[in-house]
Amino acid sequence: MLVRDAMSTLVLTIGPAHTLRQAARLMSARRIGAAVVHDPDTCGLGILTERDILDAVGAGLDPDAETASTHTTTDVVFASPDWTLEEAAAAMTHGGFRHLIVLDGDGPVGVVSVRDIIRCWAPARRQAAGMAL
Image (cartoon, rainbow, N blue to C red; front, top):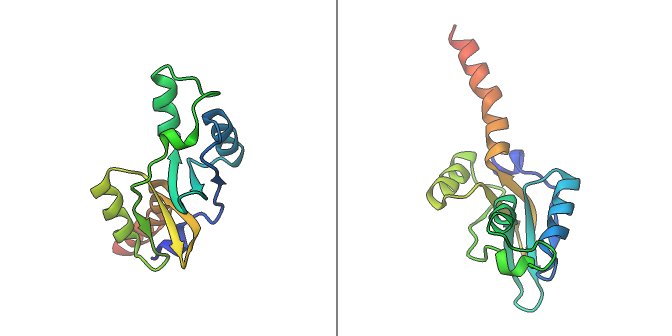
C-alpha cells in the first residue's frame, strides 16, 4: 500500500504569525494533529503539531502570544505519494516523529500520520490472519 492510499488530503496550512491558540483552534475544528506552516518570506514549509503546542503550553508559555513560527519544525522530512507505507513508517521511526507532509511537485497534497498507517495496516493484518486459519 502507498502513502497516497493512507494520507489525509485535508491539509491545514497556516502562516508563521498565527498564534498557537489560533492554530490549536483550527486543528481541533478539523480534528487533525498537524498543520503545515508556510512562510512566504522564506518559501519554506514547516510543520506544527499538537505535541509542539502541548510542549509550549506545558512550559507555561502564553498560547495567545506565542506564534507558530517559534514552534514550527523546519527541518522536515517530506514523503512522496508513491512511497510505500513501510518507507513512511521507517522515516517516522528514524526521525522520531508522527507526521509527514506529502509533497507532489511543489506543494503539499496531504499529511500522513502514524494513525493513518495503522488504520490501513490493521485490516490487512486481520485479513491475513483470517486467511491463515
